[in-house]
Amino acid sequence: MKVVVCGASGLVGTPLRTRLADLGHEVVQLVRREPDGPGQVRWDPARGRLDEAALAGVDAAVNLSGTGVGDRRWSAGYQREILSSRTEPTRTLAEALARLDPLPAVLVQGSAIGVYGHRGEEVLTEQSSPGSTFLADVVVDWEAAARPAQEAGIRTAFARTGLVMAPDGGAFGRLLPLLRLGLAGPLGDGRQWWSWITLEDEVSALVHLLTADVEGPVNLTGPAPVRNAELTRALGRALGRPTVVPAPGPALRLALGGFAEEILASQRVVPEALQRSGFTFAQADAGAAARWLAEQVG
Image (tube, rainbow, N blue to C red):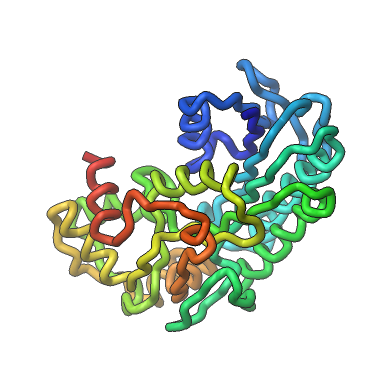
């Protein structure tokens, strides 16, 4: 299979690119600089520029483009960047794919469980309505930007990813150093539901969606969400460290600004569509996920 990947150098894109190559697939990597290796194609999504001739023969696409939502404080300018860094690449890629002949079979489009907003104890499935937060609005626009591919008849799966448990990068990349020093504990009151997925299962799920008979929203989260305090304790046990130093909500808001509300939000998400499609998790509970993550950091 010939697969075009956007965001192929990111937290998830890098191991995904490696996994696809290991499985024998041909990977076309879209880059915004001058290509410096085989299989790279330059594009300019901010200007809507992508030569579809370079995508000739592509069977599938995975789009993971987007600025990290927790990389900087949420100024008005950075909020605009969070939105545009998702919608512009998605629209540019979807329009290019829709012009191909023959059409690719599938677009696996990056998305996020942030679409559900803060929902307390409610169990959230792919049928749940969007929330009313900034990130919820971003995700709605992000997914809508893929409409040209859908309208052309390309099967489009929206990979609504949860909190990715990875040794480097993302929320856990920041949390792990503190946990290893015994300087971490519950965030806020620790009662908020965290819907996690290990990096290994995230990559496997994206590969699975390339061929699984599923479209529309797909929650990429582990099958057993837990409260923040429980997940923190599981990580502490796996690392052999105490987890008794809480991070109060006001301190998080002072340090992180608007992004703190996402950390403190409660999202009890379950992966109904993914499990129904036959996907099997390598780490199906918080304890197994914590042990896997601890192994990655040695």
